[in-house]
Length: 150
Image 1: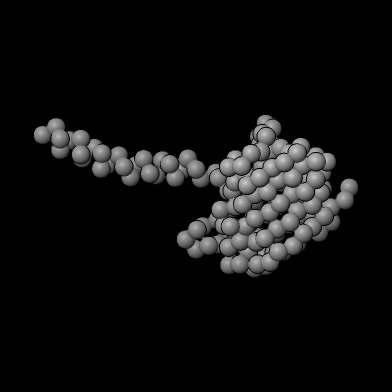
Image 2: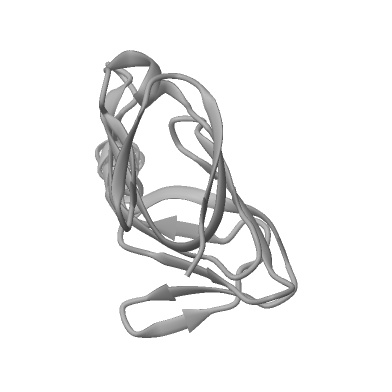
């Protein structure tokens, strides 16, 4: 009788545990692939030193100094690299892997950003945008580099 109880409990706990793990990682929008020099992630008033594998969340700000560079890959397979003296906010990110639809908005205050768009930009026109101080670029499944001098 005890064996049945434990098996039954284990079967019920399994899906609940999976759901809990999915919810716990829901804030992850991407990961740092590489960082060199003077670079940081600003998140909710904290400064984090980026390292490979570091999780990125919506509203994170990537900042680099004169010798800094940061490369990241997002969960829709978008990739980007921030060059020296950059400040880039990951303003909006939402992605449904089932439909491959979502929205991705990055704001470049200064510096340079190289982008290879992922599934969000390929599935819906105007779903990926890069905001600059004087313009907004709509990304439609392409690669490009922007530089903002200030």
